[in-house]
Image: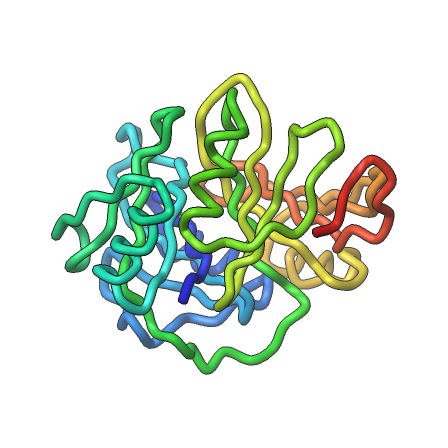
Length: 237
């Protein structure tokens, strides 16, 4: 089992939660929310929010993270595939920590196999920016993510997780993770809910389809891309 669940750090948990609700995500019951941590379910992938102090190093950042059914079994399989895993009890119990060759470090925690979330055209897309994309691709394959689309230039590789969500490794001159989404439909359908919630979305026409951009309460610009239907310059796996 593997599910994409990026972790967003925010000093304003209620506003961040309101933003995700305006996109149609629902609060998850497993794990149960508390005053500093809550998980939202998109039906295809989940997003975790963690409170932090304003101005702290974590403020406004996103960490790559995943749900797995059995942490020790995930660690064993990933290690056997070729990527080192360290077991630890940081955070919310036993977790598997992976530190990639580019220095990006992230956790896989125990999560439910079934979430009960309704089907949705919106999928969580975790972005992994890296100066050297090939080692990131190898890590994701070793974890069990399945290749979906890659650019012929070799700068973009996205993957599906068996139990929900997408993760993409993208060449850029920095190492970081960001939250994005993919929408199987017309992203203009999302404008009304975001506007009513007080946000200011902008829709941009790209070569691969329309993309909605909106400033989230934690300061990041979140991209919601329409599902890609033109594949010139890309390979579908």
